[in-house]
Image (cartoon, rainbow, N blue to C red):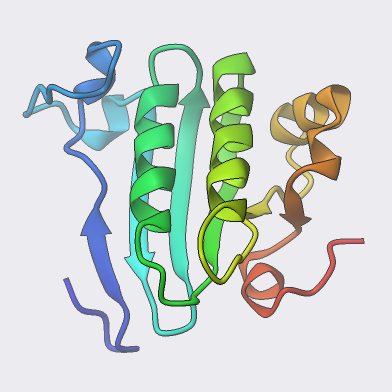
Length: 153
């Protein structure tokens, strides 16, 4: 789908596939409101934005991992922004997916760090701070700052 701003929005995976542990087989027909995790990818001229809502746990982290990997596949110099402001739970599998994404971003030609928007969402910020991943991830308070690369401090 093309937006009036020229951005393109693509579905990351069909809804319902968190019912499989590896996130590979979709079970179509389950409405987004009943999903544990919803992902939306927006390809813009200035960035690739992956918006996440719901819970990132052992069942849904493979979908997040796949979405991050797919967003990082385009080595065109645009930053990848991961918007976690609507995430209500971030478990250790989700933290691991973020760390893998940061490492994958660092290994890409023309290195652009994975930019993670956390707002002041305690269920997301707290696990990141407790594990020390705030030193590993480029954290921002809003999508605009993440695209610009402005510090969240």
